[in-house]
Image (cartoon, rainbow, N blue to C red):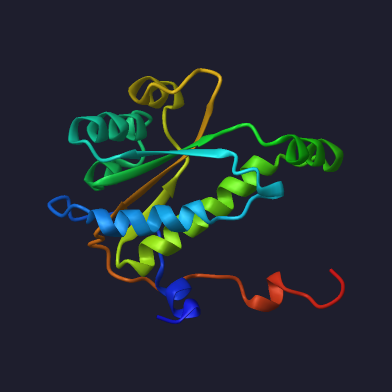
Length: 178
């Protein structure tokens, strides 16, 4: 598949076939793509917790829905929970000088790699940032000093492909000046 076609077809899916698991080789390729994601000063300020165990998935899904959102998360057979790690010295120093928190940017790039790799494998995904972090931390035994940024759910989507509503490109792109 051509890259632009992949980008056009990838969407945030909110309905999954809960009877189908993700094949280990597909998950391995998705994680290999994540492993290659770029980051500021090659800091790689993330840790990915792969959640596939049914009981743990149910508890993670409960943390997603405890605030009344993301009910569809319980259908997904795989959760990739992204935990922020400390950046290396160079990225931390650069972030301080430029007043930017590079781990947020880096984890966003990581998420793009993961979701596009999932789409290339014929899988749906959705990046979720709305969850009960305290509950998720407890379920996954994540130290209190760590910040959980995202839960990326992956599985076989039952959503129909949707047209993407986007602003006209002229509104978001300019040449040489703002």
